[in-house]
Length: 68
Image (cartoon, rainbow, N blue to C red):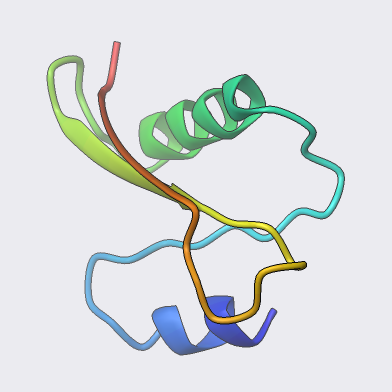
């Protein structure tokens, strides 16, 4: 939650925090839904970052995916 709040200060960053995601496909699915709600078009790129609470201070994964 703290990181999401801090990221919201940056222009063009939209963060979603969920504890119940269990796999990377759910991150991608929600990222795609949010991108479409914000008006992103097919072919646009979005960046998805994810991490685990057990590893303080690090992002485990950064992915760039195309909106479809």
